[in-house]
Image 1 (cartoon, rainbow, N blue to C red):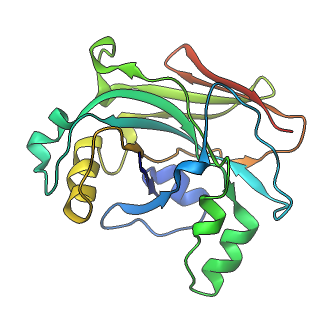
Image 2 (image 1 turned 90 degrees about the vertical axis):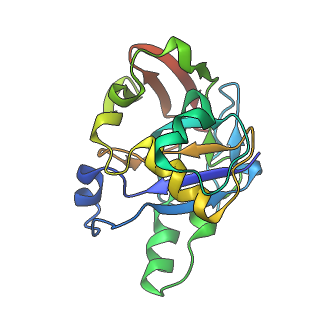
Length: 203
């Protein structure tokens, strides 16, 4: 399983971080060691003092494909989940200033908590699907797939231009506004529509 992720895919999030709107999906990857499952706690790493939460809709690739046309992309995924893209913002900001890759700020161990997947046939409309995140019972992020700059099918088509997608790969599709820091003792609860998908502690 490989983890692909898309950055800067919601205009409100682009604005809050004062980034430029991209002309194509901003793609990065995380290693499989980033995955946290079964609501395992996230242990705050010693190398950062500014870890931020970013809640995202995640899609699961169901069959192999490369150079997939957007009009056929819906045939290549079969389920959705909720994930958290933890980001070491202090490391990322410093690396960006130097024009260097920021893999270590995104791909460190445990940086991708992932819920169980829900089959697509249980989803009413993938293109109008809401998700949200609570931090200590306060809603801090809310988003909908209808507000994506690049839609799911377009993302799949774009990524498959460069990488052969394989069954079991997952794609984090971007985060809405409201990202912010977490601290030890915090609890994050993520929802898909009104269904609780993640509930774990920062330790």
